[in-house]
Image 1: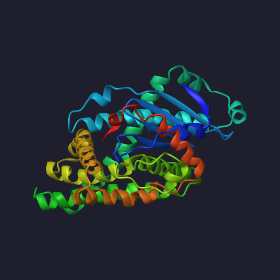
Image 2: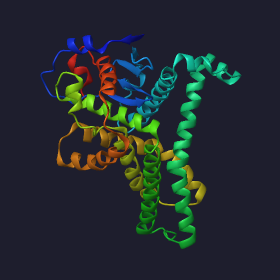
Image 3: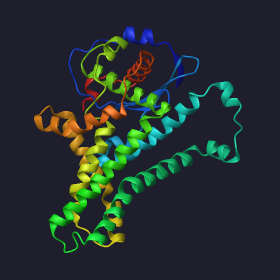
Amino acid sequence: MTEEINLKPIVDSYPEQETVKKTSIGGQALIEGLMMLGPEKQSIAVRLPSGEIDLDVRPRTQGAGKFNVPFLRGSVRLATQLRAGVSALMRSADLSVGEEEDEEVESSKIDKFLERHQGLAMTLTVAVSLLISVAVFVLIPSLLTDLIRTLTGLGKNGNFAGVFLLSLIEGITRMAIFLLYVWSTSKMKEIKRVWQYHGAEHKTIACYEAGLPLTVENCREQPRQHPRCGTSFLFLFMFVSILVFALIGRYSVLINVLLRLALVPLVAGITYEITRFAGRSDSKLSCTLSKPGLALQNLTTAEPDDDMLEVSIAAMLAVIPENAGDDEW
């Protein structure tokens, strides 16, 4: 369902939690809004040009959530959440454009075709996004490392030290590309607002986990970094890939590329399990594992304003399950 909402009555009626918890509810920053994924529902809240909040709430597809095989569930959930995120991003882009501005845009034949075949369009968008991500963050570093191996002869005798050094170079290159991407996009005004909504998402989830009523005042005081953030997942993914790729060794350029493509789901699965452990535990080990990702979130989050927090609260309230234990992490 879709509605324009007044946030105050919802916040006023929200019951105060009695215990501190770690929730499985997560979100994604959008264009002038947020998507929240709960155990049963998915919500998309967008600040309209009129100033109202448009809230879309729908049941969440349960197929991926029921797939719970360790080291395999991570890649499955990543793919399903990516699809949901792309759909939400497209919706937020449409809503954030004013009606008058939207009417001036004449639909092309391609646009009309995509409107009639939204499922196909979504699948193609996700596929292209995955291909670009794999090409930029997996294949390019691998090819560059193979070039260094060819020029220097490093690791050609198959000794583990040389192979590990090459994997380390590959991993550092991957991290450098990622950091450059994050830093460059953070300089864009439009992306800065997305990072602010990202910060609003973290603050709202932290407020909920602290057992406080979801009000702007309470959310404002929470940290904008969160250990279960996708940014932390990406950093851990790159770190895990160094170890996994070092263990399989290095071969011809083509074999290296094919092996990395084949192992991406495994690396994602291992990373998910580490993230899951770090999110559930308060041990020194989990805190250590979370620190690099938390530091990186200084680039991918920014302090939100109160209007953004209102949007985040609206999205969060819509997906909190009736049974308090259903969203335990």
